[in-house]
Length: 203
Image 1: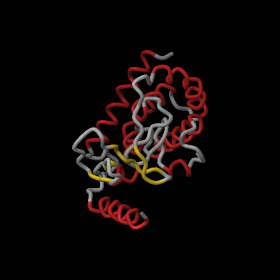
Image 2 (image 1 turned 90 degrees about the vertical axis):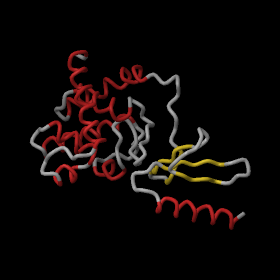
Image 3 (image 1 turned 135 degrees about the horizontal axis):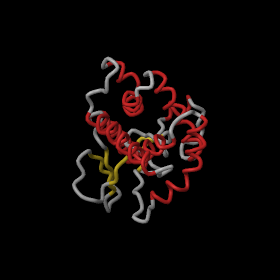
Image 4 (image 1 turned 30 degrees about the horizontal axis):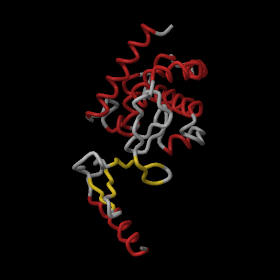
């Protein structure tokens, strides 16, 4: 049994190394207990893996009963309080949270970002967030980071959002312009869309 575990671990490491850096990784355990890893799942039995501070974990599926509107209302007082503290429009924070996690405090991205504002471990540590799943801590950390990015890019919202998604280094690399990444461009457009919507619907 020990040898089998060692073989599976080695196979897992080799599989990850050989896969493209942005490929999603899926895991399936067959009826004989054999672990199969792939970036091209062939049926619904495969579970996507995400990298977290604990290691590789299965992505948690969002319950069909999940009510993001209810969570939006639940977290609204905290969002408004934090927005006031960091002199940010509460509608902007709502827009970022909607795009990042749909108000799911347990959301985990394929890159390992966690929580309402999808904080990476390094960002969380930098802004004093000890528990990324804690809604209040996550909102505080994400808001501080967003405020920093806005200051860094002279209050250019599109650049700040691009940096929030792809990293400030990527924005600087492309001459303080939105990086030519499809994901980042879509993200910026999505947040701006929600921001405009919430400015008209939230008082």
